Length: 73
Image (cartoon, rainbow, N blue to C red; front, side, top):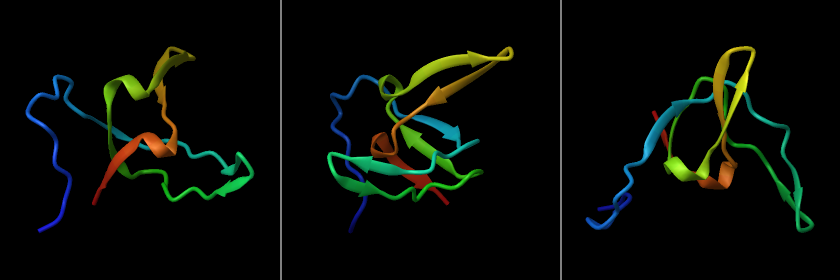
């Protein structure tokens, strides 16, 4: 009776990733943002909401917490 419903017209499929690091949180527009994600959790996000970077030969994605669609348990 609850969940996430995606329209059939959505062309880009959500992506799955594992959290390897989490920032400290902070303030956005004067509002405190607390981090609810933890290292090791698996998350679902839209492909184009991530920024790809390469560090020491390893590829990483940087994603705002607000762009996470779901946490897989």
